[in-house]
Length: 210
Image (cartoon, rainbow, N blue to C red; front, side, top):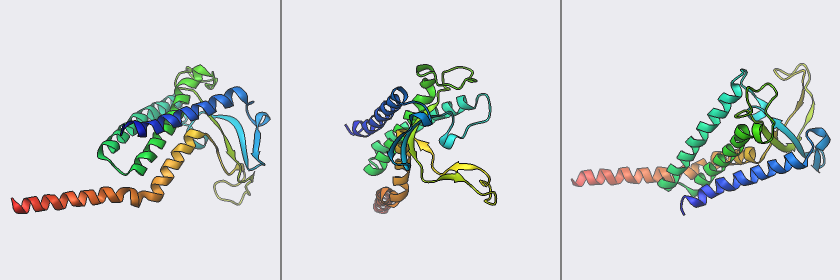
């Protein structure tokens, strides 16, 4: 049960993420014509696909997507094994839950990359094959600001830009997991630090009495 309750969180994130993506794919029109306003122009449902990494970044080669998907696959096993080790070590439950959220998000987007090119036929037209070239489905659009950036602004000047990206449940799960770790890292790692200090102190006492 100690493994199940944490891996169940990962499974729940995957199921919710995939269910929302399937609903969006089959019930919404792609792009602006199918856009649904939830809270005015600030929060909208907007069906789009992302062929690359976060914020639409891509590796610029013919096999860039294949490399990216393979990396995600390796990372998934790495995070999964790390989660297993944390549960065995009885680390802080909050920290373990955060890693479970990150793993669920990673697997959710990995499923898109591996299978959606075949299941949904959404691989780019120039992909060598549909396997491992699926595009991730995004739908939550928080439009904080959108407009033209003046030319005098360094780097980003002279372009029309939306301030906030479009994301999905998997992205949100990863973001929340990482954010909570950053905010509560002192509390998460304090127990582990205290445990190591107690172990060192016990070892010192044992050696002293030996």
